[in-house]
Image (tube, rainbow, N blue to C red):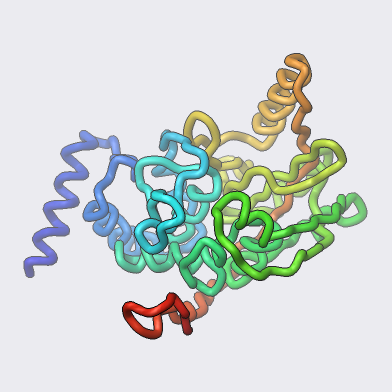
Length: 306
């Protein structure tokens, strides 16, 4: 009874803050208000794709901050927190939107977020999905499936990607880890052909923006597909200065304008090569998280076990 009363008060607070017909964006909610919102969404919108689109759009206007999250206080390599409601970068926005859409409470959201953000859900800087193509997409194959090659057909673009995780962790996070150098060949839809494949996408599909500079290709940005009432597909993403929804044509022009500005300033221009598209799995079967490592004995050297 007390729980229902608290949730009722949270809903009343949301309505009061928003005003009539003006819902509060998620980035202005408290965790208690998010809990009430997620419970209501699970009850009122049974379709996962529609929930993803609705939750993502409820965060339009959320301010953008790059390199936002870390593992603090779980780990002490930096002081960046494990979640943020007030701000996002492109990956954080996508992860939070998926996690909220798959959850019916704050507690479920928090742990779903870790399942998406880390390999096997094991929290740690060395298990975080740092590299979009080789980490995020692969470790979240239970959630999304890369359909770039069949979408592009004969027009498919490909690039080789080499990842040295050990060097990255040592340089960026002062963390030693024993990872081999890995290589993959990635498929994408070239920007010139994206318009013809958009009709085959749906709410909640995952987007990797593939950029190129100096002959190298990589996923430089991510976001979500959402559908307009007229059936057109839009790109919902977090980029400076805030989360926005835009047509793919508008996004392509915005990136081209940025490249022209970089070239005019004498800087190496970051060019748009195309997009990887990953289909939201139906249904989504969330695999269990592996056990979190724990010290064997208190006060002794930090030898960990699963």
